[in-house]
Structure formats: C-alpha cells, structure tokens
View 1 (cartoon, protein in one colour):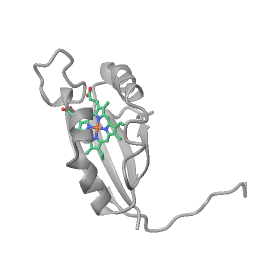
View 2: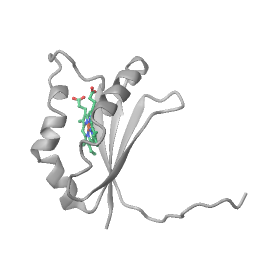
View 3: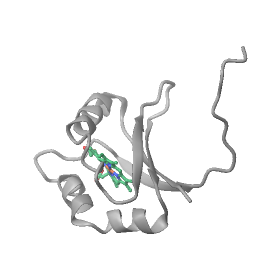
Length: 110
Ligand code: HEM
C-alpha cells in the first residue's frame, strides 16, 4: 500500500526562492526510482517557515531503498556540509510518515 513520506524543511523566508530554485534544478531526479509515485514541494502561504516535500512510494521498502541509494546520496550530497560553497538554505528538517486513512476524489458539488 502507498506510503507517504513528508520531509519538513524549515527555511527562513529569505531563503524560499533559493530553495525552490534548487528543487527545480533537480526536477525529475527521482522519477525513475523503483516504487516512486511522485512528489510535491509545498510552499507555505501563511506565515510559517516550513516547506513540505510530500513524496509517495509504493511501500516502505521502496522508500528505504531510495534513502540508502547513491541516487539519494548524490542528490543531497552538497547540502549536508554547511561549509560547502552552497550551504543548505534549510535550517532543519524532519521526516513525517503517513498512510492514507480516507480519501475522496473531490468534485464540484458547490
Ligand atoms: C522524503 C524524502 C526526502 C528526504 C528524507 C529528504 C531529505 C532532505 C534533507 C534532510 C534536506 C536538508 C539537508 C540539509 O539542509 O542539509 C533536504 C533538502 C533538499 N532536498 Fe531532499 N529529501 C527528500 C526528498 C527530496 C526530493 C524528492 C527532492 C527532489 C527531487 C529533494 C531535493 C532536495 C533539495 C533541492 C534540497 C535543498 C537543499 C538546500 O537547502 O539547499 N529532496 N532533503
């Protein structure tokens, strides 16, 4: 069953544009990963500083395989070292793990 992994990035408001740019530069990077079902980068539209990277995976194993893959390591290589030329704009990150409890396709009742 699909699992949802949300990486919560705390980003100062002046860093938002740079974060979006860095993600855009990596668009498509995980598309071919086995079990990857898509992701969205959500930008806060209120006064929060948490950006959400919502990712969907076929199952826990598929996500775990990506996390330990060289593709993940490569994609996130520069950001772990704060003394690198392009230090991360995120101040902290936290992983949230969810499963769908109930869903509706939506519609236009109103
Ligand atoms: C749930 C899955 C994910 C996890 C656990 C994860 C993990 C992380 C972590 C820990 C950071 C902060 C690193 C740091 O500040 O040192 C980060 C930043 C980032 N991640 Fe991911 N990530 C995930 C999904 C993705 C995806 C799907 C992409 C794009 C294809 C991506 C691209 C990036 C980029 C561009 C940054 C910005 C680094 C910066 O602050 O400049 N991540 N990720």
